[in-house]
Length: 409
Image (cartoon, rainbow, N blue to C red; front, side):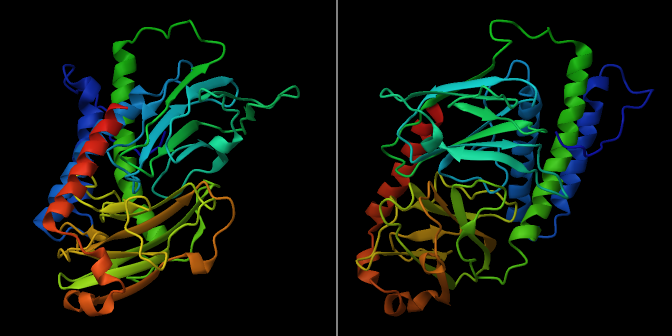
């Protein structure tokens, strides 16, 4: 949990609203932070900020409700309507709260997704620091049966621990699971469950009014900290880079050891496009490769109804083995157009997961900004990339259907 403070309930608070008074004050403070954010310049900026606030309110209440370390369960960490932390459009995120002095058993069935990874953190993000990653691994470390079933236990270090036992470092507080889709249309998620080894079959104590008041109080603290944190986070990792550039592939900060990333931020006029060229990943090098845009609120753009992201499977690869993304506001009629959806400024993110080796700089992206009207003459293999309006409509329809199916699991 984060420690951002909210005003305490006063002694003369209305007893009919005392339980939610702190939370209401936190919502007002969060709205103030949204309205005064430095990048808010247009009505669209503010509207998206208020939508982000609504999702954050929902998520904060959801998160404190899931704070069950003795009777844990996996909760959805983020989704299309409660986004944070430049969420990956290709990923289902789950988390469970844990303690470092207890054993937790995770069982499940491996689906057909491109990647499944586990990470143990020692806390949550704050406006001044990121939590430490204590353990990170992917499904290659699991003993998966022929029917896809697996079992792994997390707990304190044990001398007699064998395969399938992961020792929890001191301070372990959260287990995060990511299930990543490369082929939205055909891959299917698996199943995953968690229980504490010594409480299975027992029940938590019943709720009390005092416990619910504390829950609202903690949700308010979490809400304000969440807004502050992810307004500050891009400043550390993105905005200090030169605009309209991307970094070389590098191991992702935060300890997700099986992932490399390349990041940047863009600023494009309506009559400009950014052409990003990157080699397609060779078979056996990575199980997943994807690209996305993010808004200045540090969340994904609408990836359901617009093509604001592409996995390698979704992208059209040119005959020279390279993928060329065309980032811009205007529709160029090309398969790999990445829609800015009215966002002149935003974030750029590549992810490679399930790597079998480190990537080299030559395997990373190169960037060129050019006038929109020069695309036919300057974009290699331009004709190969062209799509008709009906083909584009089919691409969007496929995204909508795939996300709807994925959300139902």
